[in-house]
Image (tube, rainbow, N blue to C red; front, side, top):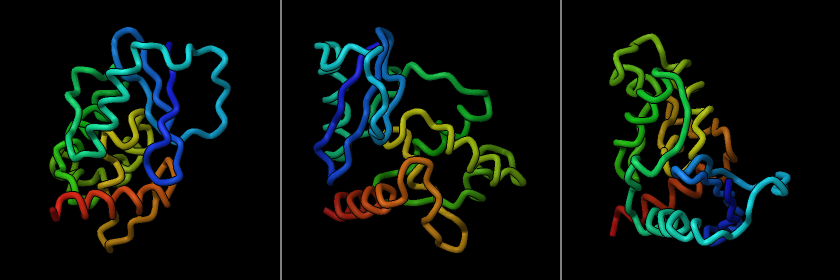
Length: 155
């Protein structure tokens, strides 16, 4: 496994992990023990570019992901990935879109297990009352990402 700490967005350090097959994890860096990973290996260059491109408004090709999840989680992650930059969706809407009208809580749980925070844009899911709280990574990151994407999409 390979690792890189990306620190080009706000004051957040974003940990990127990858295998030979693809991206396995993207989230806030919180002093994880990285001794089992090879830091800054050349293989990471293409994944750093993916993150750079994301911050330019480009969504990654999911074929570069090397992640595990249940069938339900994958349905949720696939659907949330269709939400354009600067837009949000209610958990209930997301549940309806995947054919689980009573599953808004399960959708929230699936988003909470998203291994590719930012790239699978779970930050774009909000509560029906407009509440943007609730983000498995860092609520401040959710607010900053939504504001950043809104500004990017308004250009």
